[in-house]
Image (cartoon, rainbow over all chains, first blue to last red; front, side, top):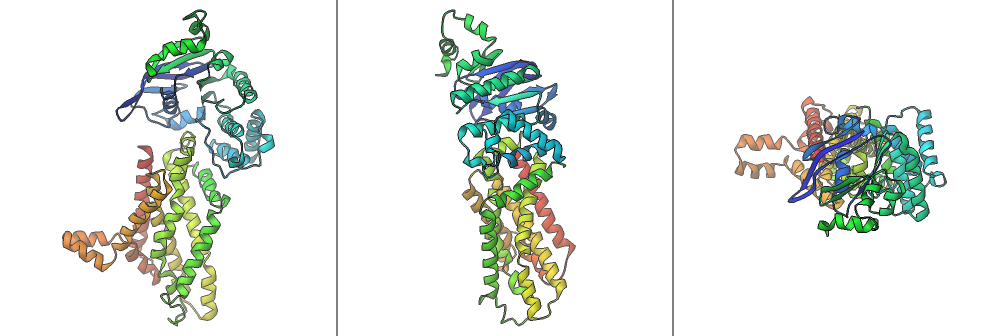
Amino acid sequence: MIEVKGLVKTYGAKRAVDGVSFTVRRGDILGFLGPNGAGKSTTMKMITGFLRPDAGTATVDGIDVTADPVTVKRKLGYLPESAPAYPEMTVEEFLHFIAEVRGFKSGDTRNAQVDRAITLTHLAPVRAQTIETLSKGFKQRVGFAQALLHDPPALVLDEPTDGLDPNQKNEVRTLIKSMATEKAVILSTHILEEVDAICTRVIIISRGKLVADETPAQLRSRQPGARLDEIFRSLTRGDI
Amino acid sequence: MRQISPVFKREFLGYFRSPVAYVFLIGFLLISVSLAFSRYGGFFRAGIAGMESYFTFFPWLFLFIVPAAGMRLWSEEKRSGTVELLFTLPITTLEAVLGKFLAGWAFLAMAILLSFPMAITVAYLGDPDWGVVVTTYFGAILMAGGYLGVCALMSALTKNQVISFVLSIGACAVLLFLGFSSFTDTLEGWFPVFVADALSNFSFITHFDAFTKGIIDPKDVVFFLSLMAFTLFLNVVALER
């Protein structure tokens, strides 16, 4: 579903992403791990067409994101880091705007789509509230609702559980898991327990390079008996 | 191009979701009307039932008021990170640029048209030439579009609204002053006369003048439209880089 080949992005003298390749199939939940600044967000921004890669390709459903960005964006749901949204709009206004841009033109289908997203993310109690008055957990859910709204075949989630309390984290994980059977999901995180909780595959990136691409079980078997964070530390040692 | 309308709607209504719109509209009308009645406008002293004393300040007023309305267009999106949201939605950069620009332009047009009580006042006091009033309004709205194109471009260059505001005033001031003889005389000292002449053709004032006299010259219309097209093109380039 999502195929990334040799992505490179350079900022000035710093190579933020250095030849990253991986594929995500339908039904996969790919955990994208790495220390802060390792290039996770940059890679995701290139997949979603926000940044143009300096080299390499990212394709979604066989379509190259640089060749036909609009079609790729139609197939993707994207939750950017820290879930940006227009603060002066209410949750409902914001989701209606997203629905309209996503091509749900007629009132009925748009309402249905917005209601579905609100129900999935449990936003009903705040639907008439402006986004600037929401707590961080609710804001994160608005970002999540926005990404799910058009029921996309592929989801790219940049730290979806960041800033949520343990209960909300659990809920988001359940939600991702329940949808993943027919979707391809990439989620970045630096919470290692998340990998065990939901991911079917893990990739670890360090200084812009892939250092691991395997199942959580394979990752564990690298150092039998060691905790995940010890394995993570030994793989990303160069980044400290 | 079908995706312009949601962007337009969100942006236009966005002005009214915060106090920005009300402060702007009241401020604009208060300043523009008081200038017309002031000593410098000489609305009564002129003894003419026309709106010239009202519109004569517009190129100057726009120098501050349009950057105030346009500085947030892109800077705010960049600062709050929503630009990432906008450009990962299935729309092209051109659609986003046009939607936002047209919303800002419609808002400015609304501000200008809300001065209609001035026209009613003039009609009450005398018998104005309605043709001139209409062409002047038309010219003012076109000119607002020209200013706004410049401001939208400047706004796309920075995520800081203050920098965007100052850059916009600077760029608009250049386009305004190009029309003054003292300024073009200086230019003639530096450049050959035909270059200076060509440059002075890019002034807002030169092109707005005819409208206030009741003339719609295609060349003025083309000037403002092509200025908008050019700045919007650069706007797309600035955002895609």
